[in-house]
Length: 128
Image 1 (spheres, helix red, strand yellow):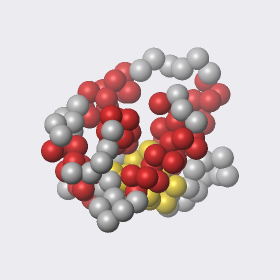
Image 2 (cartoon, rainbow, N blue to C red):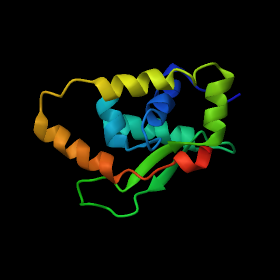
Image 3 (cartoon, rainbow, N blue to C red):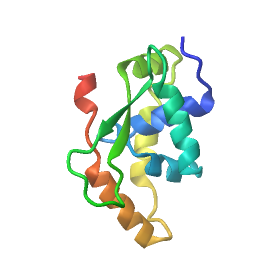
Image 4 (cartoon, one colour):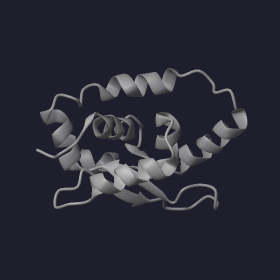
């Protein structure tokens, strides 16, 4: 089994809790109240090795310089690990929670997040 901790599990669940099953490091940092560099370091560690749990996907059409070109997806091995440790089924709860979240206090910041969300490439086909 992969050497992962609780924060790794939550990170993978947060990535999978979208319609596209992808998120940018900026989105993940906002969700986790962490620095983008901290999130990227964790993502890079999970993407390393013979059986990576995370992979990167480039956006088809970058919208602007302010919108990330690189997004992260959980690999099939990452999904298997979540299932093996009994942490896959909770993803639906996270999805519902994020969808039902109240409007944020800073609309300008969230308008930018909406642009980022629309630019996300999809990793859903990889699991079907």
